[in-house]
Figure 1 (cartoon, one colour):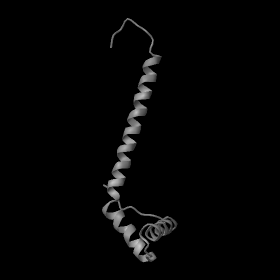
Figure 2 (cartoon, one colour; figure 1 turned 180 degrees about the horizontal axis):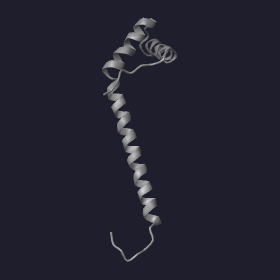
Figure 3 (cartoon, one colour; figure 1 turned 90 degrees about the vertical axis):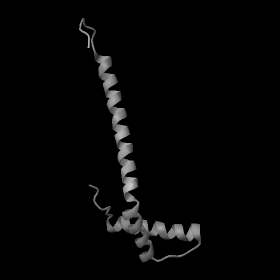
Figure 4 (cartoon, helix red, strand yellow; figure 1 turned 30 degrees about the vertical axis):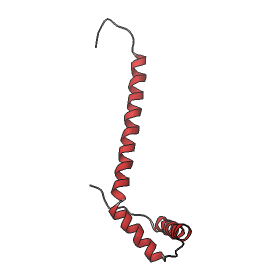
Length: 85
């Protein structure tokens, strides 16, 4: 079960500044810290799970690739014998 996404105060302050800058630079609007924090909380609650799951899928793919590489390396170490698999 996915727990709520929580950020430290420092992390949240950075995110708030990023949202405020985006609105100012891209939308030519100024928003306050409260509004920016509200948007961050909204996106975290409503969309955060999609990004979290994508991260999990990417991690699973990376691990699967590494396991394949290890398996190939182990196969290369195999010595010839009369036994078959």
